Image 1 (cartoon, rainbow, N blue to C red):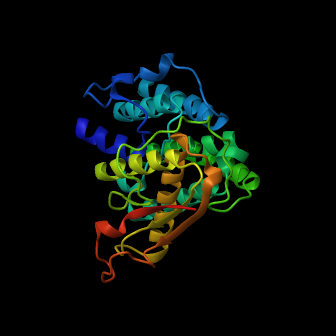
Image 2 (image 1 turned 120 degrees about the vertical axis):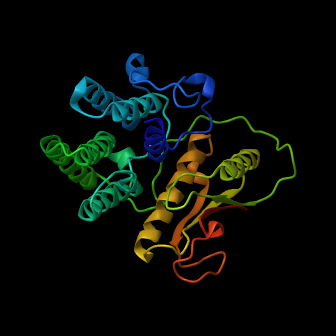
Image 3 (image 1 turned 45 degrees about the horizontal axis):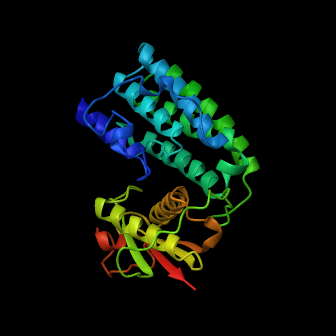
Length: 304
Protein backbone atom coordinates (compact mmCIF):
# COMPACT_ATOMS: atom_id res chain seq x y z
CA UNK A 1 0.00 0.00 0.00
CA UNK A 2 2.72 2.46 1.01
CA UNK A 3 4.86 1.63 -2.04
CA UNK A 4 1.84 2.13 -4.31
CA UNK A 5 1.18 5.50 -2.70
CA UNK A 6 4.82 6.58 -2.98
CA UNK A 7 4.84 5.75 -6.69
CA UNK A 8 1.72 7.79 -7.37
CA UNK A 9 2.72 10.65 -5.08
CA UNK A 10 6.20 11.29 -6.39
CA UNK A 11 5.14 10.72 -10.01
CA UNK A 12 2.41 13.33 -9.60
CA UNK A 13 4.27 16.07 -7.73
CA UNK A 14 7.16 18.41 -8.63
CA UNK A 15 8.00 19.79 -5.21
CA UNK A 16 9.82 23.10 -4.95
CA UNK A 17 13.18 22.72 -3.17
CA UNK A 18 12.40 25.77 -1.05
CA UNK A 19 10.01 23.63 1.04
CA UNK A 20 11.47 21.80 4.00
CA UNK A 21 10.45 18.53 5.59
CA UNK A 22 9.75 20.32 8.86
CA UNK A 23 6.90 22.21 7.18
CA UNK A 24 4.85 19.10 6.42
CA UNK A 25 4.52 15.89 8.41
CA UNK A 26 3.41 13.90 5.39
CA UNK A 27 5.37 11.89 2.82
CA UNK A 28 8.75 13.17 3.98
CA UNK A 29 8.87 11.33 7.30
CA UNK A 30 6.75 8.26 6.62
CA UNK A 31 3.47 9.53 8.07
CA UNK A 32 0.57 9.36 5.62
CA UNK A 33 -2.74 11.10 6.03
CA UNK A 34 -5.95 12.14 4.27
CA UNK A 35 -6.69 15.51 5.82
CA UNK A 36 -3.48 17.58 6.15
CA UNK A 37 -4.79 20.18 3.72
CA UNK A 38 -8.24 20.58 5.29
CA UNK A 39 -7.25 23.42 7.61
CA UNK A 40 -5.25 25.25 4.94
CA UNK A 41 -6.50 28.19 2.89
CA UNK A 42 -6.13 29.05 -0.82
CA UNK A 43 -2.96 31.02 -1.46
CA UNK A 44 -0.91 32.42 -4.31
CA UNK A 45 -2.14 33.17 -7.80
CA UNK A 46 -5.61 32.19 -9.01
CA UNK A 47 -4.25 29.04 -10.66
CA UNK A 48 -2.86 27.70 -7.35
CA UNK A 49 -5.94 28.80 -5.41
CA UNK A 50 -8.17 26.85 -7.80
CA UNK A 51 -5.90 23.80 -7.72
CA UNK A 52 -6.13 23.83 -3.92
CA UNK A 53 -9.92 24.08 -3.88
CA UNK A 54 -10.46 21.42 -6.56
CA UNK A 55 -7.91 18.91 -5.23
CA UNK A 56 -9.25 19.30 -1.69
CA UNK A 57 -12.79 18.70 -2.94
CA UNK A 58 -11.63 15.60 -4.85
CA UNK A 59 -9.76 14.30 -1.79
CA UNK A 60 -12.86 14.70 0.38
CA UNK A 61 -14.97 12.85 -2.21
CA UNK A 62 -12.55 9.92 -2.21
CA UNK A 63 -12.30 10.02 1.58
CA UNK A 64 -16.08 9.55 1.83
CA UNK A 65 -15.82 6.15 0.21
CA UNK A 66 -16.17 7.23 -3.43
CA UNK A 67 -12.79 5.76 -4.35
CA UNK A 68 -9.44 4.47 -3.15
CA UNK A 69 -8.08 5.71 0.20
CA UNK A 70 -4.63 5.85 -1.38
CA UNK A 71 -5.93 8.37 -3.89
CA UNK A 72 -7.64 10.34 -1.13
CA UNK A 73 -4.16 10.75 0.36
CA UNK A 74 -2.66 11.63 -3.02
CA UNK A 75 -5.20 14.37 -3.77
CA UNK A 76 -4.95 15.69 -0.19
CA UNK A 77 -1.18 16.04 -0.60
CA UNK A 78 -1.62 17.80 -3.92
CA UNK A 79 -4.05 20.23 -2.28
CA UNK A 80 -1.54 20.85 0.50
CA UNK A 81 1.26 21.67 -1.94
CA UNK A 82 -1.08 23.92 -3.93
CA UNK A 83 -1.68 25.92 -0.74
CA UNK A 84 2.11 26.35 -0.54
CA UNK A 85 2.20 27.64 -4.16
CA UNK A 86 4.38 24.72 -5.29
CA UNK A 87 4.46 23.28 -8.80
CA UNK A 88 2.21 20.22 -9.07
CA UNK A 89 2.06 17.75 -11.93
CA UNK A 90 -0.97 15.81 -13.06
CA UNK A 91 -0.93 12.01 -12.71
CA UNK A 92 0.85 10.09 -15.45
CA UNK A 93 -1.01 7.44 -17.44
CA UNK A 94 2.12 5.25 -17.09
CA UNK A 95 1.57 5.08 -13.32
CA UNK A 96 -2.02 3.81 -13.61
CA UNK A 97 -3.31 0.34 -14.51
CA UNK A 98 -4.85 1.12 -17.89
CA UNK A 99 -5.35 -0.75 -21.13
CA UNK A 100 -3.34 0.22 -24.19
CA UNK A 101 -6.36 1.98 -25.71
CA UNK A 102 -6.98 3.88 -22.46
CA UNK A 103 -3.33 4.95 -22.33
CA UNK A 104 -3.67 6.42 -25.82
CA UNK A 105 -6.75 8.39 -24.76
CA UNK A 106 -5.00 9.83 -21.71
CA UNK A 107 -1.81 10.55 -23.66
CA UNK A 108 -3.85 12.73 -26.03
CA UNK A 109 -5.61 14.45 -23.11
CA UNK A 110 -2.29 15.05 -21.37
CA UNK A 111 -0.88 16.59 -24.57
CA UNK A 112 -3.81 19.04 -24.65
CA UNK A 113 -3.17 19.97 -21.03
CA UNK A 114 0.56 20.54 -21.58
CA UNK A 115 -0.13 22.58 -24.70
CA UNK A 116 -2.35 24.87 -22.62
CA UNK A 117 0.45 25.18 -20.05
CA UNK A 118 2.92 26.05 -22.82
CA UNK A 119 0.57 28.70 -24.23
CA UNK A 120 0.10 30.58 -20.98
CA UNK A 121 -3.04 28.94 -19.61
CA UNK A 122 -1.97 29.39 -16.00
CA UNK A 123 -1.92 33.16 -16.53
CA UNK A 124 -4.67 33.78 -19.11
CA UNK A 125 -7.14 31.08 -18.06
CA UNK A 126 -6.10 30.14 -14.50
CA UNK A 127 -9.44 28.75 -13.32
CA UNK A 128 -10.13 26.75 -16.48
CA UNK A 129 -6.54 25.41 -16.60
CA UNK A 130 -6.55 24.35 -12.95
CA UNK A 131 -9.95 22.67 -13.32
CA UNK A 132 -8.63 20.87 -16.42
CA UNK A 133 -5.70 19.45 -14.46
CA UNK A 134 -7.74 18.28 -11.47
CA UNK A 135 -10.55 16.81 -13.58
CA UNK A 136 -7.90 14.97 -15.66
CA UNK A 137 -6.61 13.40 -12.42
CA UNK A 138 -10.20 12.60 -11.38
CA UNK A 139 -10.90 11.00 -14.77
CA UNK A 140 -7.76 8.84 -14.87
CA UNK A 141 -8.23 7.71 -11.24
CA UNK A 142 -11.89 6.77 -11.82
CA UNK A 143 -10.99 4.95 -15.04
CA UNK A 144 -8.39 2.84 -13.25
CA UNK A 145 -10.85 1.71 -10.57
CA UNK A 146 -13.54 1.06 -13.25
CA UNK A 147 -16.03 3.61 -11.89
CA UNK A 148 -17.74 4.24 -15.23
CA UNK A 149 -20.17 6.99 -14.19
CA UNK A 150 -17.54 8.85 -12.16
CA UNK A 151 -15.04 8.61 -15.02
CA UNK A 152 -17.58 10.00 -17.51
CA UNK A 153 -18.45 12.89 -15.21
CA UNK A 154 -14.77 13.78 -14.73
CA UNK A 155 -14.06 13.43 -18.44
CA UNK A 156 -16.95 15.75 -19.35
CA UNK A 157 -15.69 18.31 -16.84
CA UNK A 158 -12.18 18.03 -18.31
CA UNK A 159 -13.44 18.51 -21.88
CA UNK A 160 -15.41 21.64 -20.96
CA UNK A 161 -12.57 23.18 -18.97
CA UNK A 162 -9.78 22.40 -21.45
CA UNK A 163 -11.80 23.81 -24.37
CA UNK A 164 -12.34 27.04 -22.43
CA UNK A 165 -8.65 27.20 -21.47
CA UNK A 166 -7.53 26.59 -25.06
CA UNK A 167 -9.70 29.48 -26.26
CA UNK A 168 -7.99 31.88 -23.84
CA UNK A 169 -4.34 30.75 -24.17
CA UNK A 170 -2.55 32.56 -27.03
CA UNK A 171 1.19 32.00 -26.50
CA UNK A 172 3.78 29.48 -27.64
CA UNK A 173 6.50 27.76 -25.57
CA UNK A 174 8.98 30.33 -24.26
CA UNK A 175 6.69 33.32 -24.79
CA UNK A 176 4.78 33.07 -21.52
CA UNK A 177 5.28 36.13 -19.32
CA UNK A 178 4.69 35.19 -15.70
CA UNK A 179 4.19 37.88 -13.05
CA UNK A 180 7.50 39.01 -11.65
CA UNK A 181 8.49 37.44 -8.34
CA UNK A 182 9.58 39.69 -5.47
CA UNK A 183 13.19 40.71 -5.85
CA UNK A 184 15.41 38.14 -4.17
CA UNK A 185 18.54 39.19 -2.30
CA UNK A 186 21.75 38.79 -4.28
CA UNK A 187 23.62 35.74 -3.04
CA UNK A 188 27.38 35.59 -3.42
CA UNK A 189 28.41 32.15 -4.69
CA UNK A 190 30.36 30.08 -2.21
CA UNK A 191 32.55 28.69 -4.99
CA UNK A 192 33.79 29.96 -8.36
CA UNK A 193 31.04 31.00 -10.77
CA UNK A 194 30.38 28.93 -13.86
CA UNK A 195 27.98 29.73 -16.67
CA UNK A 196 26.84 26.33 -17.94
CA UNK A 197 24.88 23.52 -16.24
CA UNK A 198 23.22 20.25 -17.19
CA UNK A 199 20.26 19.19 -15.03
CA UNK A 200 19.52 15.44 -15.39
CA UNK A 201 16.01 13.95 -15.26
CA UNK A 202 14.54 10.56 -14.34
CA UNK A 203 13.83 8.28 -17.32
CA UNK A 204 10.53 9.09 -19.08
CA UNK A 205 9.59 11.74 -16.49
CA UNK A 206 9.85 15.42 -15.70
CA UNK A 207 11.26 14.56 -12.27
CA UNK A 208 14.74 15.93 -11.63
CA UNK A 209 17.26 13.42 -10.25
CA UNK A 210 18.80 14.02 -6.80
CA UNK A 211 22.08 15.04 -8.46
CA UNK A 212 20.10 17.31 -10.77
CA UNK A 213 18.53 19.09 -7.80
CA UNK A 214 22.03 20.06 -6.64
CA UNK A 215 22.94 21.30 -10.12
CA UNK A 216 19.72 23.33 -10.37
CA UNK A 217 20.33 24.89 -6.94
CA UNK A 218 23.81 25.92 -8.09
CA UNK A 219 22.47 27.40 -11.33
CA UNK A 220 19.79 29.37 -9.44
CA UNK A 221 22.38 30.68 -6.97
CA UNK A 222 24.71 31.83 -9.74
CA UNK A 223 21.83 33.33 -11.76
CA UNK A 224 20.76 35.36 -8.71
CA UNK A 225 24.32 36.49 -8.07
CA UNK A 226 24.69 37.73 -11.68
CA UNK A 227 21.37 39.47 -12.50
CA UNK A 228 22.91 41.08 -15.59
CA UNK A 229 23.22 37.71 -17.38
CA UNK A 230 20.57 36.28 -19.69
CA UNK A 231 19.45 32.65 -19.36
CA UNK A 232 19.08 30.11 -22.16
CA UNK A 233 17.39 26.72 -21.66
CA UNK A 234 17.68 23.75 -24.01
CA UNK A 235 15.80 20.55 -23.14
CA UNK A 236 16.62 17.03 -24.33
CA UNK A 237 15.29 13.46 -24.17
CA UNK A 238 17.20 10.27 -24.88
CA UNK A 239 16.50 8.12 -27.95
CA UNK A 240 14.29 5.56 -26.21
CA UNK A 241 10.72 6.01 -27.48
CA UNK A 242 9.07 7.76 -30.48
CA UNK A 243 10.44 11.09 -31.77
CA UNK A 244 7.18 12.99 -31.24
CA UNK A 245 6.75 11.75 -27.69
CA UNK A 246 10.35 12.66 -26.80
CA UNK A 247 9.91 16.16 -28.21
CA UNK A 248 6.86 16.73 -25.99
CA UNK A 249 8.69 15.24 -23.01
CA UNK A 250 11.60 17.65 -23.51
CA UNK A 251 9.14 20.58 -23.66
CA UNK A 252 7.71 19.52 -20.31
CA UNK A 253 11.24 19.32 -18.87
CA UNK A 254 12.00 22.84 -20.12
CA UNK A 255 8.80 24.07 -18.48
CA UNK A 256 9.76 22.33 -15.23
CA UNK A 257 13.13 24.13 -15.07
CA UNK A 258 11.52 27.44 -16.07
CA UNK A 259 8.92 27.15 -13.30
CA UNK A 260 11.43 26.03 -10.69
CA UNK A 261 13.80 28.92 -11.42
CA UNK A 262 10.90 31.37 -11.34
CA UNK A 263 9.68 29.96 -8.01
CA UNK A 264 13.19 30.46 -6.62
CA UNK A 265 13.07 34.16 -7.53
CA UNK A 266 14.79 34.27 -10.93
CA UNK A 267 13.02 36.81 -13.17
CA UNK A 268 11.68 35.09 -16.28
CA UNK A 269 12.25 38.24 -18.33
CA UNK A 270 15.91 37.19 -18.34
CA UNK A 271 15.09 34.07 -20.37
CA UNK A 272 16.58 34.48 -23.82
CA UNK A 273 15.91 31.07 -25.32
CA UNK A 274 13.61 28.21 -24.29
CA UNK A 275 14.24 25.39 -26.74
CA UNK A 276 13.00 21.79 -26.68
CA UNK A 277 14.85 19.49 -29.08
CA UNK A 278 13.70 16.03 -27.94
CA UNK A 279 16.11 13.37 -29.19
CA UNK A 280 17.19 15.27 -32.32
CA UNK A 281 20.35 16.88 -30.90
CA UNK A 282 21.72 14.29 -28.51
CA UNK A 283 24.60 15.39 -26.32
CA UNK A 284 25.90 11.80 -26.26
CA UNK A 285 25.55 9.97 -29.61
CA UNK A 286 23.65 6.68 -29.29
CA UNK A 287 21.70 4.32 -31.51
CA UNK A 288 17.94 4.74 -31.72
CA UNK A 289 16.11 3.21 -28.75
CA UNK A 290 19.07 3.47 -26.35
CA UNK A 291 18.45 4.82 -22.85
CA UNK A 292 21.18 7.33 -21.95
CA UNK A 293 21.11 9.44 -18.77
CA UNK A 294 23.43 12.00 -20.33
CA UNK A 295 20.75 12.82 -22.91
CA UNK A 296 17.91 13.23 -20.39
CA UNK A 297 18.90 16.75 -19.40
CA UNK A 298 18.04 20.42 -19.60
CA UNK A 299 20.99 22.69 -20.37
CA UNK A 300 21.12 26.03 -18.54
CA UNK A 301 23.40 28.61 -20.11
CA UNK A 302 24.09 32.01 -18.50
CA UNK A 303 25.05 34.58 -21.16
CA UNK A 304 25.90 38.25 -21.54
